[in-house]
Length: 87
Length: 237
Image (cartoon, rainbow over all chains, first blue to last red; front, top):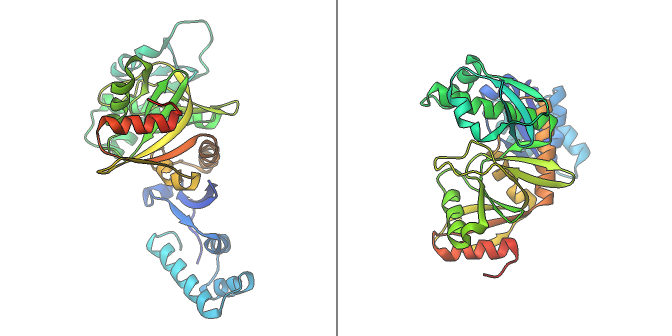
């Protein structure tokens, strides 16, 4: 899966947020705040990755168990899917 | 073509309806400096606004379109942004009250005017423009000034921004930039492209790091104005 065209990250006041620009604004008008691991996953998803690839990237970067990494990826992906941000 | 000056930007405008020049006539500019831009308003601009506010007449929507286009220019060229708030000046300093529509920012601004009389000047009760100039943020009056039409063609240096929530008892606390962030983002125009996004988030980051930030729980008593005024200005009424 991959982040759709028009969804971008911007930072202010120490927070990183997802917003939609251009045609993507038609379907998404909100703001999503991401924590650091989510930003890390987002950057990978901008290029495209499978859930398995996200889990192993997370395990490489953060000191977490496989179970926690799998759950974090699953939750994050579910959030992106429900907001219709990934293809 | 008549020239106008809003937020220290001199411009001309080509419009469809006669309402626009009537609404902005308080900002006519009659000196010699040239206009730095011409804002062309077309049916497509009105249609864009109609999408957001279908019940409003075209002539009013055209005026909102002018505000949006002016702010787009200011965002990309002048380090400035739209900020939906009630802005009051006391002397050369300004204090901004922000909240979702209907929460009572105009009411709170009115309490300040009751408390301070002529010392409180309404810069704008709805849609002022904020600009970053030489390390400080200024709020400018605009003709888009809310249902009570309270505004002044002037600017003042922003000292504080206060978010308002309705409550039974009055209480004001300082808050951090990250606590104010979403409030500010929901009271400005979200960017239409990546370039606007970069400018807007940089500006908001600077704004939140420059001015003092507060959260006020308040009712509509006179005490609440005294509390926010004394806290935000350091005065002691």
